[in-house]
Image (cartoon, rainbow, N blue to C red; front, side, top):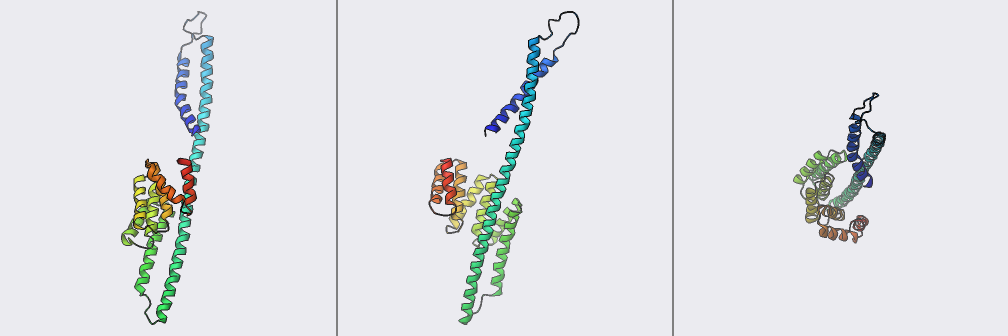
Length: 251
């Protein structure tokens, strides 16, 4: 932050110094044997040269600071992208585990049903489940590919078709994340809040409370932010460590 403030001050001061140098340079010099009372004195010439060298030094400093700011901005963007990749990879793994557990459960149920003489689930039911999974995966892949606007449309389309589907909570969460990355705090708050209301037992509840707490903090609602973050800090979830750190650094 100090470097950014220094860069701003240097950039603001450079035009003033440059104007002063140009004023000094624009004063006429009469090179005749007659004394010229308008000619700059030695002190004025020394000041002019000093200003010139100061301006050169400031310009070099500005270029160096601009380079540092660009490097820091690139690093911040890289870390944000890495964080999103980590979230997406974790979500993909958990989704696969959940889906595998459900498939195993359905297989056991089918075997029991066949042994008891009951019919197995219809082919149409299996096709419907596959269609739901593919719809969510398509939206999820758009997010992984950084097609953010298309991902928003795809997640919304999934929720319209499967409002209580297996991946509805995940879709709410990722919509909240997307709008948080877009710095649209109101829409991010809306999606995170809807997840907590509509799916209070979803596996992403702790993550959602943590993110919603940070959103409320950025919106200036510190009391609600602390309430949510303290809930997460004490629930023993993976997000609890993040919540404790956020509370220590911001409250």
